[in-house]
Length: 167
Image 1 (spheres, rainbow, N blue to C red):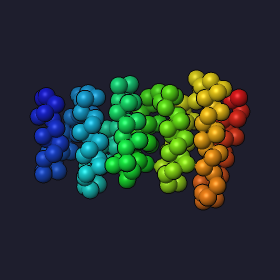
Image 2: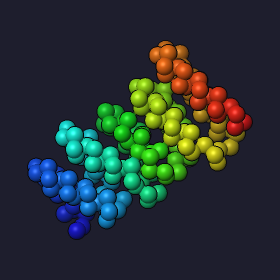
Image 3: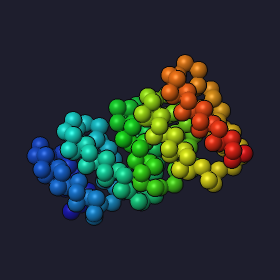
């Protein structure tokens, strides 16, 4: 099945067809279908379809998915799906270490749930960071602490403590 045929199946009105297609993609798909899957996540309100897409995102092991996921995180059209997309970035185990400043910004600007996911991505990927990169991430987080809820401030402060132990 080529990309065009697969995309057509993903856009089907028949939920069973969509779910079957996503299931097949989890086993045999490639990264080229990822933008279509993200669009479907954004546009679908069917919980089974959304859950299946999130599972797909969590299972991705191809590093070529990283820039596609980062682009979605940075795009305002995906703000309602940010917890799922950011969560997939630590669940799939890919190396996002060169994008941790983006996750620090997400921590500052997104809701508490998404901030937890972003914090987990940072904690899962900071082992190869230079001291200057750690300092930049700490600075981004510190600059956004004021005005946050107490829970989110505590989360941000905890991550700063962890990052400071690396310096």
